[in-house]
Figure 1 (spheres, rainbow over the protein chains, first blue to last red):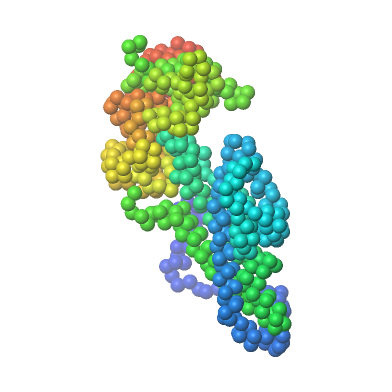
Figure 2: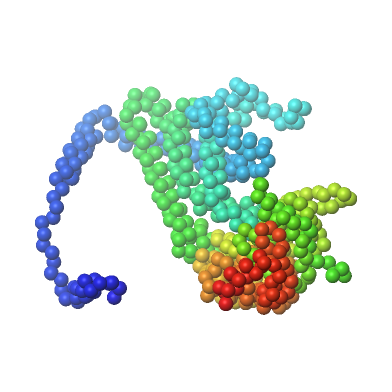
Length: 311
Length: 260
C-alpha cells in the first residue's frame, strides 16, 4: 500500500473489493454529440452526390475505362514508368551517397562542388531539367572521350548516345541525387562521433569506417525518407509525358489525343498510379517495421542482419 | 631507464582547442609493462592527453613517442612530415583504446564487433579471428553472449566486450579513458577485474580513472593532473598517502574521502 493517507488506503481496499465481487454496472445517460451527427449527415450527402455523379454522368465513360485499363499501350506505358522510377532512383541513391560524402569532406573544393551541385539541382524545377536533358544534343551535338583541352579519342552523336528515355532518366536521377544527398548527409550526421573514434582507434582507414561502420548505421535514418522519395518519384515521372517518353501518362495522353476520351483515360492513368503508390506504401511500411523491430527489441539487429546466424 | 625504450614518452606536449589551452606542457614516461593511472579533476586534460597518444587529437607543440616512434609525424632530418591517413591508421593498430561510453558498434553482435578490425584491418581470416575472439570473450567472462547485440548487454558487459575488441588487435599498449565512469556501481567490479588480469599479464596500460582503489592496488605509478599540467607523480601509495602538493591534497581529500 503506497497511499500516504488513510483516505488513500480506503480507496485501495475498495478497488480490491471491486475485483472480487461482481460489480454493479453504471447506468447513465451518455453525453450527446449533436455536432458529430450533423457532420456525418453532411458528409454522407456529399458522398452520395459523388457516387451518383460517378454512376450516372456518362462523361466518366466507365466502359471506356474498362476497355483501356489493360490495353497493350497502357501496360507498355506502365512498364516504362516503372523503369523510369527504378533507374532514376538508382542514380539518385548512388550519386546521392557520393555527393553526401563529398559534402562532408574537409577539402573545400570537394565539399564546395557538392554544395553547388545540391544548390543547382534543388534550385531549378525538375520539369526544366528534364527538358534540358532532352535537348542536350543542341548544346553538345557530339560527346567525346579524350584528354581535357587536348586530343579526343572517341566521338558519340549525342542524339544516339542519349535517347529520350536516357535523357529523362538522367534528368530525374540527377535531380533526385541532390535531394538524396541531403537525406544521406542527415543520416551520416546522425551517427555518434564515438563510433568513428572507436573505429579509428582500431586502426581503420576513413573509407573503411564510412563503409563498414557509419553508413550501415546511417541507413536507419536514411531508409524511411528514401521510401517517400521513391513514391514521389513514381508520380513525378508523369512529367516525362511532356517530352513524350512513352510512359504511362504519355500513352494515356496519346490515346485520348486520337479518340478524344480525355476523362476516361485520365481515370485509367490515375488508377494505375494509385495502385503502384499503394504497393510502394505497403512495401515501405514493412521495411520500416522490420527495421524498427531491430532497433527497439534488439533481436537480430536491423535490416535482418541477425538472420545470418554466423559472424 | 636508458637501456629500454619507453612505451610512451611525452616532452612538453601542448594542446589547445581554439584559444582554450587544455594541455600546457606534459612530460611523462611509461615503461613497457607499466600500469600508469592518471587522476585529476574533470577538465584537467587527462582524457585529452590520452587521446593524443593515439593521435585522436593532434598536439600543437612538444613531442610524443610511442615505442620509440613519433606519434602522427615522421622526422626526416630537421623536418617533420605529417603522416597520411593510412599510416596513422597503421600505427593505431598497435594501441588499443577503451572509451567511457564503450562505443561498441550497435549493428554488430559481440563477436562481430571483435572480429571486425582483425578481418578488415589486418586481413585475418574469419576462422582465425573468430577463434581468438571466442578466447577473448571467454577471458572477459562473456563466452555465452557472443551473439548478443550491444543493446542486449548491460553496461559492464558492453565495456568488457569493448576491452576484448581492443585486445583482438594484439596491441602492445592499452589506453583506458574512464572505463568505469558510465557504469552502475555494482557493474564496476567486473570491468576492473578484467583490467587487473590484463595488468597481471604484463600489458602496458595508461588508465584515466577515478577508481583510487584500483590505482593503489594495480597501478605501478600514479599521475595527478590539474589544469593541463602534471602536478605530481610517483608510486600510487606514496602519492595517495603522502601527497606533496597542496592541489593533490585537496583533490585526494575529496575523492578518497568519499570512496572509503
